[in-house]
Length: 455
Image (tube, rainbow, N blue to C red):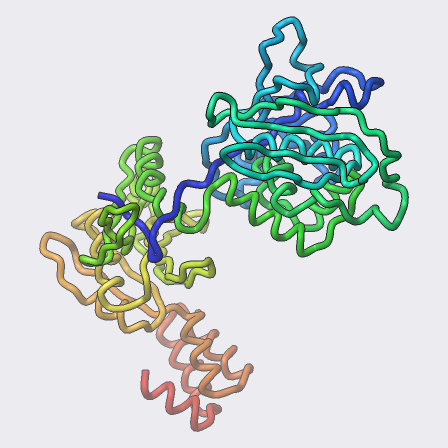
């Protein structure tokens, strides 16, 4: 069964890591030394130094392996492929010295485009596209009309590989001086798409890269200071390159949950379609994503040693496809939070809350254990905790004091009264609670008194 979002799933975005270990064009820059080595993360020495200067820390260990930054970790993943030219038939030539010359091969047209753009930006040599046919040829020429620099590429034996067939790799124009303020902030090939491919490895190492950090990184690598809007678009495009788009993310969800379950024994997960709704994708009828639930095995086992109290709530999603994430958490004897269960649903309603609570009570909580559930006063939750599940112990429900005080404040509009109500919620004896509540009741206005009597 294939799950997709509404609208239908588009083709998988080609995931590319940009590698420059053969980027130095020996004919264009004869005085350049050998290329810098590229590490396993796809960064050259210069790029690694620029990353450390901008971010303040080395790109290794990555965000997902540095435990000191565990509180900032996000999901990592994606399959990458090195973007680089292939060596031509002239085996006597060293790959690291193989620049813009006839015979250099590329895995795809996109790979050639990114490679030649990097040269143009790096050496401040803007060009214009003369011919662009994805099946026949791709030709670029220096934007200076008097310059003879030109590179022509064609599909290699019908594709998908491409190769440079002819070129004039030496510029006969004077070029542009990056120190000139009239050209320092712009370049024809310095688009948001190119920046995305260029900084993808840096963002992969540190997904919390700021937009200002992207701007500083490009300035450090190429000498150009791009605008904020272009850097923002580049970062979003880099995320798409590394992790896919929104539609792909939902399509990957069953595989992602399966992978997490394989690495975390005892993990329970389920993905359900949206009723009987289907969409046509590439001529095939597929099911539409409805909702998903998962609970990690280590968390399930750990909850056996925690207090029999859980908190549940829902938060809306702000991505392209709206929805709600339902969460159940507990806390241990040291008052540290323990995530228990998660769910992605379309909206908070009776059906989704009953479905979520049924899975929590049958898959996470031991059948004979009575647990207290703390939540806000959402009617879907109130109905879900009242459901009787054969073979499972009853569930006790209490209101969340923060939500309760917040609702009270909206009714009375008095901050001091809301603080007094919070003191009532924290009372540990019936006598103390009665004393505080009677005092509060005598001070409340009509709105607050009406709210208190209604609850």
